[in-house]
Length: 238
Image (cartoon, rainbow, N blue to C red; front, side, top):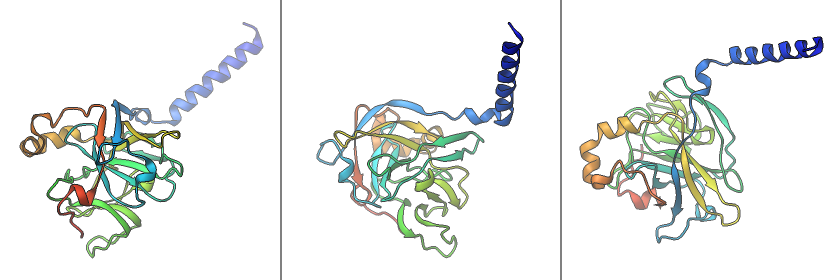
């Protein structure tokens, strides 16, 4: 090795070491998790198209398990990539929205505090167009996901980042792919702080009654998307 090569290798090693020291060890630990590709369908069983979604409207489907609900939203505006942190101090880069306007996003509909979730009978958590009005917890923004059980507020345009309330981390993101040729949508995985184990432990009996023995079975191939007002008999407003 000649002198020039030696100097270049030393510089490369120093740069690598500096980059390692600049980033905490946990910064690369939160990575996307794959559960299989699941095509999203409309209520009559046809492939859902992004253009079918009404802006700023709550839609629900189930992924990655038969009993775990997900909010699908067309925010009506681009959602840009955001760096977030889980309650376990794991950093991750949320990739932002997808679709022609990068306005389509999806998040687990399980609140990150008390694990409140939408059921067919009742839902204390939903997306709210405009400012959420609550005297106990004034809104810190517009167009947020709001949980009436604990008044946690999440910003779906910034990866469901917590803006208010006791929630300790963003809602777990569900990664969606958009097919530019067919306008179709496919769920491909999750990113961020999963709470599925806690969810199944807390609601084991309830979920067995709602979903039967397949509550913890991963969704296979397809999942039906419905408006929250059609999925749930009583979406609570607070």
